[in-house]
Image (cartoon, rainbow over all chains, first blue to last red; front, side):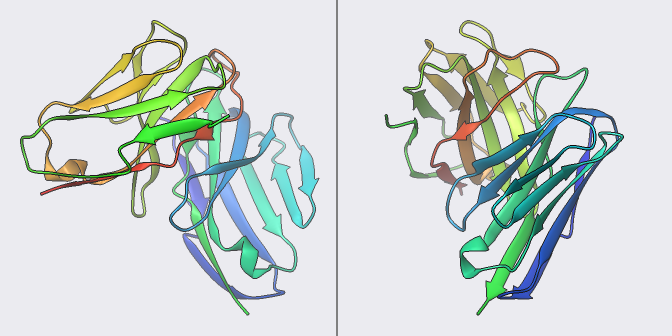
Length: 111
Length: 117
């Protein structure tokens, strides 16, 4: 079945440093979504990307969807302690219905 | 709006016991989902219901059954619990009825933390 790989699994940064997590699919995606889960919480939707090469920004967060629609990235500029949590990508293929979640990247930010 | 609610929040079972996890949404959403989350494994889809009256298997359906009771409610049943089913279970819903190549925001419930001894 389709696999969505996400790296790194963990990232520990000092507050103010940048952070990037990458998502790669073995097949072409029709769309990709990103979610954030705080420790002890539930996943919360951040954004959906649909178009090849699409770039979207939310304040300090920048999301990209690759030209081939097989990869995506989330970049956080100047991390804050409130960015702590696990970031998941989730992709849907052209032939499938359900979302396939990556295993997530857990971000720890120390002051 | 309460969004997506799940009961119970915590549960401890003995091997072989059965139980039903309840999920309800008050957003008039069409599609509903059950996921399990294990450390280092991300979210894995157990079952989903693309619209009222339909259910389909996800990635890890063995040992589970579901019922889409009505548009609001989607329950997950463990007939004979096993230690391998110790996990956090999340229910989610989406506004759109599911179709190939199209989906939208998934709204998650707070989760049920299940331990099977």
